[in-house]
Length: 308
Image (cartoon, rainbow, N blue to C red; front, side, top):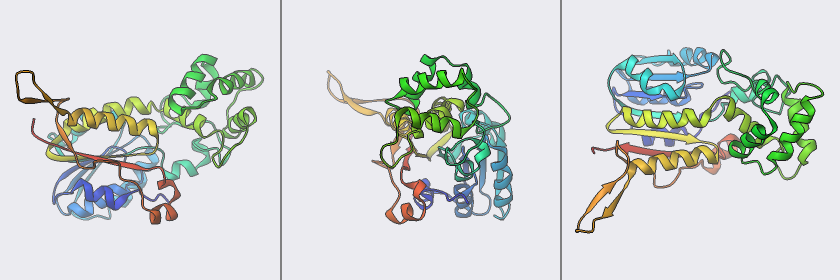
């Protein structure tokens, strides 16, 4: 079962209004979305977007249990949020949520290929109806390209050694399963510490397959533009790369006051303008980490749009 991370903290900080309009750009199994609709009550509208068709089916059944609300579910990418929302509800919205990363059901289903814990096809596509799989990408990328992906998206210090091993291994037999790739990485760099040595490699490939940084950049720009004055944008991240991107984007839109040579000062930043609701990232409590270990790396950041 998927347990939504930082559920109360996220919905509290979104300051859900009665009868408001909200967007969940990464709907998943709708844990956060359902709580938003329950808080908003009758007349509340939520546009839920997800690339995973199975997640949309399960979410639809769950959200139908909330009476008097309007849940609009769309198969799509959160990077296309601005277009999707304007097509579905026309105007601006009271709040936007992104809960990034991989859901528990996706990790637990071996056939999705996200995890090395159980052997399965090396897929990693969040939308299994489109795009190349991880197996197809590492079959065609050069050693340099593999190393660059592992270094930039996985922050893997052994990127070159792993890339060289992948190229050598695939010349013997295609690498088509999670177990084969995980075993190859472990043999190449050894096992140290609590984390599996293939953790960074799997993260990098997943992010590349799904263009996660590109999607996030477009979603951040689109989400801020969609907000009404006073509307809030909440983002939950699980990796340092995505958290840094969110932090930089929010800081750029929060801007800063700069002194002028002639006296006085002016605001300098990107529009639309926001103010930080969370001065530093909100993290899971010890109790939540104990009951849901996957919340350990979660970071929540929230901003509110203000008049220019």
